[in-house]
Image (cartoon, rainbow over the protein chains, first blue to last red):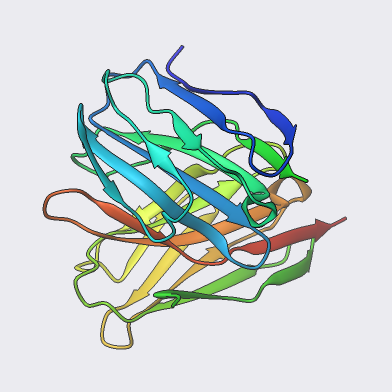
Length: 113
Length: 113
């Protein structure tokens, strides 16, 4: 089944404790992105990647890091989480051609205390 | 700064009625306009999309109307059903290289029996 998977789905952590949210896709897509979803703000792009070892900042990159060492994986790293990073996070992949349809993962709800 | 403005924030429609969600954009480089549908606990999924050289696109009960001169587009859901209750996001994409997606803030639709 073609899908984007994220882990964990739920995470409660404390300020300053480094964490990683994993994302994997099995559709051989070139492009992958991370978004955060907050009430009243919609989906805002954090980082995106056009291919292996090629990443760039989205609209809200502060406090986040990413890496793309393999085509299928695109982890999101919060090296020192803060309460304002409490949010719902989505990973998405796209073939990058044609319609540019984004395929979203199920989301990770993160709470930083 | 929100490049795609979406309204209303929430909408209640009776079963069988027409649901209308509006979006406006500023960046004339946008050339692809998808709508995403999100059910609670799920990631967004592509519903319907349009290119600016077309003024209207219909798929079943869902229609996009596009006004290029006004830089506005809207989603119409005909014969709205309780199963349509979800959050809807408009989006805009500027192609050429990476297809960066800018989302609206979302509309929570509730269809009541």
